[in-house]
Image (tube, one colour):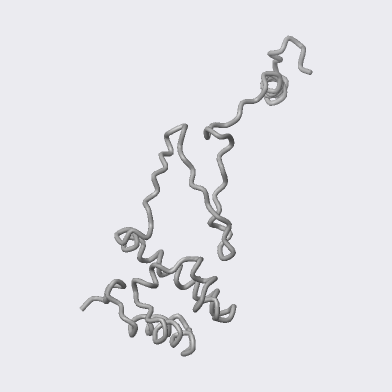
Length: 157
């Protein structure tokens, strides 16, 4: 018989998962007995929940470890989260010059969630002024070819 889907987890399955993740009885009691967290709730927990009760009442170690464990569980169940509408599929077209880039908030829990904005507003690289482009071209032609033959008619400055 296969493992029970997280969607069907009750308080007992959630408590068992928390035990396997190394949480003590006080954390299990707060989440499962007092607040009746089941599998769906675990998938729906987000960063804001860690700043509000009951998660904010956990000590720092338990709060951080729980955050990491829940993120891992959510990654393992990404398809279920999409089915529940908890996660949107990315709609960025990498071939479009006008791709939209999602804005992200700064997270106190995970620095890697930030996304760098594009080089310019329209997503294209910014243009160099013509004089800089010409200078780079001259340098590449004269100095990178070991000066065997100068394409600049002797004006390599």
